[in-house]
Image (cartoon, rainbow, N blue to C red; front, side, top):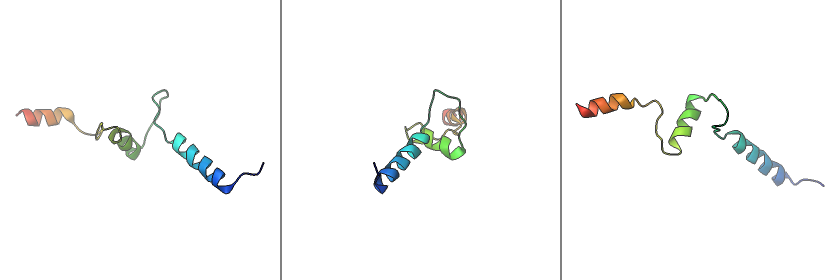
Length: 60
């Protein structure tokens, strides 16, 4: 069976997406860019935000 070029491209794209998923099952290290994307996409926000400092400033 001969594959069409579109099939190869689609498979390559799928493997790239699957390989870029964030997994909570395994220990992993992320680059700063990956960590920011992993937090901002679901709406968590910037992981470097100092919430204690923000709270203290807002409280005063």
